[in-house]
Length: 420
Ligand code: GDP
Ligand code: IMO
Ligand code: MG
Image (tube, rainbow, N blue to C red):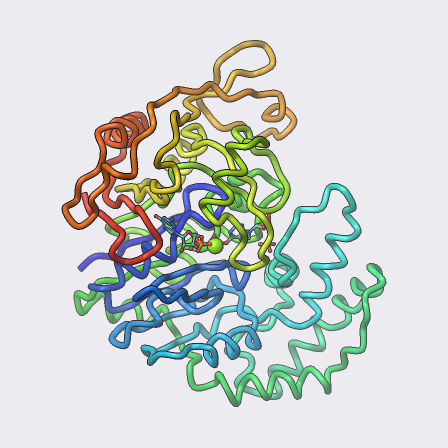
């Protein structure tokens, strides 16, 4: 029995969907534990691309149970659309009765909050994620289990609506919500999704007791974690090992493996600091070749060199038992490749730990180690052959972080993967 957690070690979009889909092969349950449809996970099966936002990346495997855990915020309309769009047969889906519902006013509030911030906007995905988690923390949220009963829906809306309406008015956002029209919507969601709503913590614990392999599919990445990310340029949940355990209702001690997923370089969507950002032709090359455009919003992703100072923090918080290094193919045929090994601060001191202060971080410059590039012609995936220069790069990353590398990814497809 293994309980494996897949964690984005950077700013999201590391390739968690691909790793989850790959490892789902010998798993019985794949669960999402946090975030919502701000996530965009791409999996490529037999050359066909599938983009998933809320459905776990095990959904395309018929014998896998897909779970939307209690820590996820669910937009039922998005979920229904995603289910409709699935062309191939899918496995069983279950949704936690404790997962919170993204209501239409949350999405409008996300827009209002962002506009009010002007230049200091976070660059959210605009999906109402933050406002929904705010209601959860304020104890006026609506949970999936609440949808099962009219009286509970009305009781919850009586608490949630006045405050959300006041906020909508504050931002000058349109506001024609009433308890009656929201009740109609909630009933529609109950009719279509009610059969999937259950206590998923209980279900997962039964599978663990039966010795089944479980995968917890992280969304986002450690550096947009609400606790340890570049606050306030973060998301509103915890994309960490601890967040995965809590958000799926599993005791942390049951987790056996933690795979930290990182690109061989670095990307970020939205605002916030980025010490190794490449605002030059190299950055543009990586963006074009790596097709670094958001899966959810289509926005161009900012690109830069791999940053081991960031990964040290990710590992400290999450305890990676191995690393999956993604998109190494994108760096093929470059003359040289850089890796940030430390920062130099404004006083000239070298620092090895990611600071919490963004104003201090803004004064830090990356210290690089430069590696010789490798040739794509020296890669033979079916034979598991990688070029010596790539081996040197990977060994350095692994030794510097003291984490073994388990997965080397050289393309979006399932078969473009080497297991070490
Ligand atoms: P996620 O949010 O972490 O699941 O990642 P995204 O799906 O948002 O972004 C990763 C993108 O890289 C997707 O388009 C994947 O199909 C693609 N991808 C994943 N691994 C590799 C790889 O090793 N090489 C290449 N070229 N593309 C990859
Ligand atoms: P996956 O799972 C990359 C970013 C947004 C924004 C910030 C807050 O595909 O890796 P939010 O809508 O969550 O309130 O936005 O977080 N963000 C992501 N960036 N990948 C993601 O998910 C992200 N989910 C949120 O761009 O900067
Ligand atoms: Mg993504």
